[in-house]
Length: 90
Image (cartoon, rainbow, N blue to C red; front, side):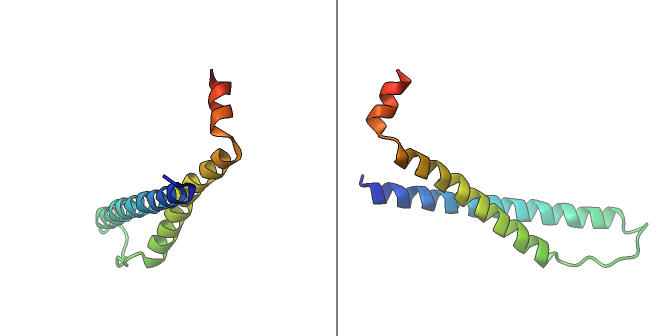
C-alpha cells in the first residue's frame, strides 16, 4: 500500500467512526431528551421541541474529535522512520 492510500484509509476510517458515533449519540440523546420531557410533563408546562441546534453541535463535535483522533497519530507516525521505531522497541 502506498503512503497516500494509507492516509486516505485512515481519514475515511475516522469519518466512518465519526458518522457512526454521531448517529448513535444523536439517537440516544434525543430519546433521553424526550424521555425526560415526558417524565417531567406533569411538573413543567413546556412543549417538547426537536433539538436541532444541539444535534448540529453534537454532530460537529463528534466529527472533529474523530478526525483529530485519526489524523494526529498519523502525523506522528510519519515523523518516525518505521525501521528505527521498531529497533527502539526491542
